[in-house]
Amino acid sequence: MKNSGIIVGLDIGTTKIAVIVGRKNEHGKIEILGYGKVPSIGVKRGVVANIDNTIQSIKEAVAEASAKSGVDIKYVNVGIAGQHIKSLQHRGSMIREDSETEISQEDIDKLCNSMYNLNMNPGEEILDVIPQEFSIDGDHGIMTPKGYTGSSLEANFHIIIGQTAAAKNIYKCVRRAGLEVVELILEPIASAEAVLSEEEKEAGVVLVDVGGGTSDIAIFHAGIIRHTAVIPLGGEIITEDIKEGCSIIKKHAEELKIKFGSALARENREEEIVAIPGLRGRTPKEISLKNLASIIQARMEEIIEHVYYEIKNSGYEKKLIGGIVLTGGGAHLKHVAQLTEFMTGLDTRIGYPNEHLASDVPSEMASPMFATGIGLVIEGIGRYQKEVEKQKHEEPVIIEEAPEPEGKKKRKKVKDPSRPTKRFPEIFLDKIKSIFEEDVD
Image (cartoon, rainbow, N blue to C red; front, side):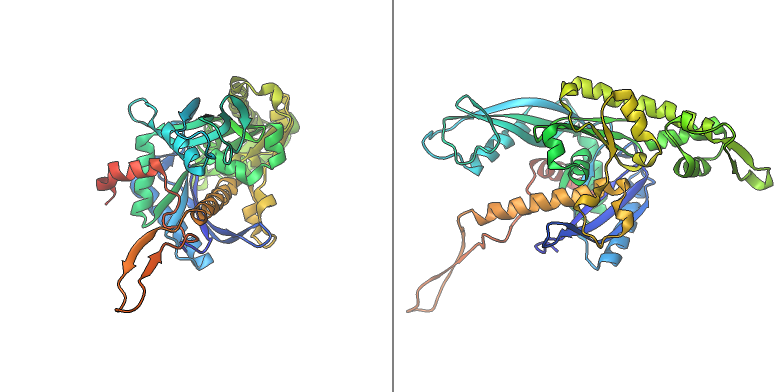
């Protein structure tokens, strides 16, 4: 699997753990070779709360995906989210020794990697560094500086920060489940890859992934990610509200939300009633769908208010021609797009990942619920291809000089530049490995 182009995404969510096995076909679409989905019983608000339960859920999901795809799963791209995630903007610069030579990918990587050395608060680590725009000798707005000449290389960076302990626990769970982490990828970035078009990113758009424990936000403008945030509210707290407000068990509350839930109370009539089975022979309980929608609407309004605050805080409120795209399991709620439009004044649509999928994939996979998992596969494929291209353009390196019989010329074995020797080297991942190796063995 290592060099076959098959990529595996592992979405460790609050309500489900999903494993998706995919690859890109000749038409540039994603073929889903197999997938597994099991309930998540060890994760709270996107953060691992019970390691043993999480490991068990990962193993079950991997076994299901492996059986369906026929792939022996070993390497996975893992999504990371949770309320501990935050981001900041930073500008970095470097002076090149030779201003006459062209700027190489090595120069760009050196500048990007220097951002990992920024001082963080205790217990925090830089998870990802995303370059936005480059400047060369004061010439701004350069997107791809490779090939330019100049002495000063500067760039604006979007830096993702998270708690070391949270990342450590994810890494520990994956390793103990018999897998290797290829990349830790921020979940809203993965979801954006699955449901947003390049035109929307260029025009300005807000992605809101309403998951079980959190709602993840990513704002794009001019094709560049500008702002990310995680709201510690999601579909699970709506279920809890229904459970408390209607005095029913959580299982029935979840079923009510999925089958009859609406984010707009005015769309339901008073006489619309649904009966919930009573416990242990008790009489059925009648629930008004208007009251149910009122409970859901109150919590969804709170979530949307948080989203709107982040939009205003980003400074791009007036530049979002593409409006808002809702995805994740919470996007299944009826009338949620209408409520979002009403509260924010921005055009809103539901984001489905089917645009990037091949025509023969299971219909279930085209659901917003799987946007993150599919996005992890898409993002993983993109990073894999970049690494392959990078290896192709590197000079062959002599790794061994084999002695030949006398009278024959010596033969040199060289590294095949088309074959990656290390998949996606990650500074942060290497740090986690070195610091916590004793914990995961």
